[in-house]
Image (cartoon, rainbow, N blue to C red; front, side):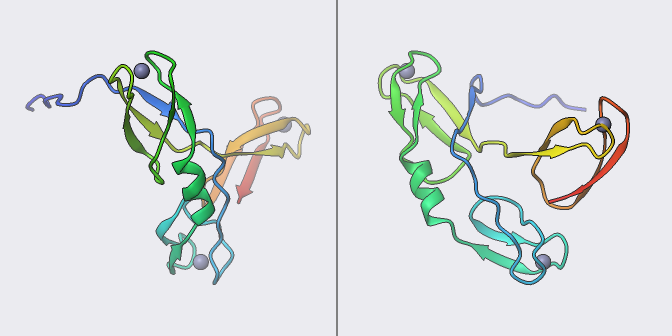
Length: 137
Ligand SMILES: [Zn+2]
Ligand SMILES: [Zn+2]
Ligand SMILES: [Zn+2]
């Protein structure tokens, strides 16, 4: 197997701090894949064109510190992930979506667990009491 050539420079990734609101399928109310754009509902296969103008506005105006020189930059791009370049030191980096988590309480031991908010059903095991928990957002 041929080795893949690495074209991109060292990839510095920073996570965005803007909360992404959950969006739900207008037909079946299931959670859709997050963010704006054309989304396919995992439950009923409906295609939904999600518009989130205020999120795009917040993304565009998000301020982030350059990972190399700490200069505060304005993202200027209403999408995540996006590639940015520091205007002061030319450092390139990628700004990714914030990973949204929801807090749930284990039905067995009531311990609070933080779970990544993704569409579909998930089966988890509580790390404290090992009870299996079924989750659907
Ligand atoms: Zn649906
Ligand atoms: Zn910089
Ligand atoms: Zn538990």
